[in-house]
Image: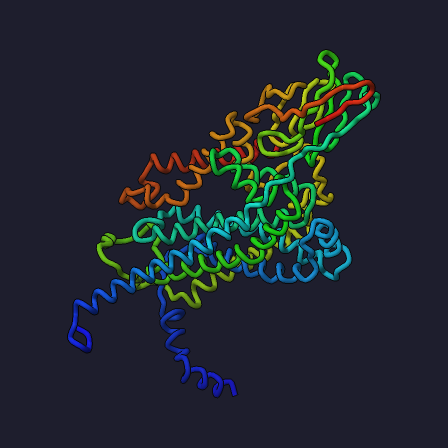
Length: 146
Length: 363
């Protein structure tokens, strides 16, 4: 009972204040939570629209050249049977960089022994999908990536 | 003078009553062994980490262009910098042993059972936080080893559908490990994790003191009273916490320091392989990169399980089982030796862990 002897009014007022408090608390919490998550989610990287040119003479048949295309470490391979291919070196398992093994004609990830063929397909180990392949054009003596 | 100071304190906080109730008059089971001291050893280890960590902070620069050089500077130019850095590195490994040993002994003595489920949960969370400390601290020297170990670990959530990719970019702060990742891990290592650990240590110690130390199930006389209501587990006829048990703890703390300085003197590079002394190269993954010894078993498991999602999910499930074990094990028998199936399972898991660790090391 309040000082005026009005119990119901007091209870209603208290319930209303409790609900208002919960609403304000939730609003404040949500107002903090949204920017908190946005703060830790980095903005999307700039789309890699640029092209990259290499000389064919730099990569004899059976050889490979490591390079970086649009911030992604890549390897350009001159395959004896199928010609040039540009593959991302980022292993699709856990992000280590694969190495080209000329003698075994494969790409090996040194972290968990994932193995890819020279087209980027998984031949053994834990990688869940093939290596990312970049579009290329071979014009004259140049290899145009991207 | 001392008497005056003592009296001055006594009047204000009642020191003698505090000492009587919490130290000399606080009785603990007479059959406590050295395994019961490992929690305290880990606590002392954390204090060593805080002190050496603060000392390292005065010279360390958390920036990709300077991090490796600043650590080399600490090792080579700063007087006794090598000592404090190696104490920090070796100390972190010894803490993992102490916390792991503490958890093992609690499991073996079934001390996690009712009413101590929350005490186990807080302790198990602290083990995970200890490992998070090791992981976040690993990146800070910005070496080849630290860079690629962090690349692997931060890519682990990518195995999970829907939120996995988002979690990876949130952890790395971009598409790969970079200066942003270093900043995040630095903040985690020196602010977020210490605060979390402090909170958990407080909860853990509060629970231990509030419920009382459990007596080992081996050689216990008489029937145990069922836990139908809250009570403090008293140990009439036990030994005083101080000086008896504190002496035992002090002995094990000295074993910790002896081991620490033994390694520092005779095997200073035990936990610093060659790749830890090379600056990070984001375009070259070193061959045969291996995680620290305590991550070798999960590392080998990831290699063996052909499906990435299955491999990561299996490890998440095992971690959850470990965290919530007291809630899953509802058997009333608290002597592990009388529970043959659980004992056999425990031995199998332990041997499996050792085999995977050795396999991971030499694979």
